[in-house]
Amino acid sequence: MSLPFFECSAARLDELVRPGMLCAFDFDGTLAPIAREPHGVLVPAAVARRLAHLADHAAIAIVTGRAVDDVRPRLDFPASFIVGNHGLEGVPGRDVPADHFAARCAQWERSLPLALRQHGIVDPGIHVENKGCSLSLHYRLAREREALEPRLADICRSLQPSAHVIEGKFVFNLLPVNGINKGEALNRLIEASGARSAIYVGDDTTDEDVFRLRRTDVLSVRIEPDERSAAEFHLHHRLGMIQLLDELTHRMRRFA
Ligand SMILES: O=P(O)(O)OC[C@H]1O[C@H](O[C@H]2O[C@H](CO)[C@@H](O)[C@H](O)[C@H]2O)[C@H](O)[C@@H](O)[C@@H]1O
Image (cartoon, rainbow, N blue to C red; front, side, top):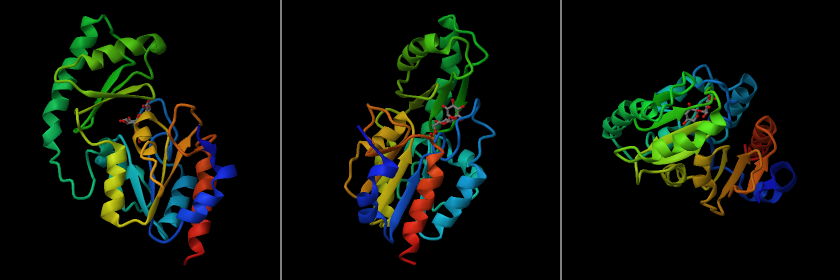
């Protein structure tokens, strides 16, 4: 079980916060609050301002399930790295052409509505988001969404060509089988940037691939505790990000 960040992380911060630290963050539910729909989501000004201050002292990476082109305009601060589609885009040195996965996503985008109809699922609250390299089936706004969840999971897992399905917050993320994940993406970011240590903050199932790395040079933080999480620490609420960012900047300034 992860430990509460503010109460228990001082020794780890003493060890890892130093010049050359990479500060990596998930986007939805970590930097930005979860909203009813994906568009219109921005990093709140109080968080963006602190990230801009932190960027004066450390490289910042965003590692998100969104497409890079979708998330970039939502970041009102300088990010050194933007990794999108759960690691399929934006990892330095891993130049996979976007159209490599596009055909598969297009097939899923066509077959999902058919499969939903075949299972008698017609609900305007369900929508498909094709992100070029991966695809999300959103059902946050569906009627009786808890009852729908296992049926949607079955449909996603039966698709052809088959997908690596990761459940998120009222979303099923469909990724290529044997593709990179966020954990592998962070490993490559650390290597490419020459970082001497890193912090990673995330809130969702796809972030568990980072938490499971359990690298001694990476401090991992989950937004909201979850007994199944492999994260080292947790924040009780996303709003704790403000204090966490202040703490990082304060510590980095000692080296300025
Ligand atoms: O890796 P992340 O940055 O956490 O992205 C994960 C997914 O986030 C988005 O969906 C989630 O946030 C939406 C806006 O708050 C919310 O409406 C939805 O229910 C959540 O699942 C995004 O739309 C997806 O593409 C990302 O995969």
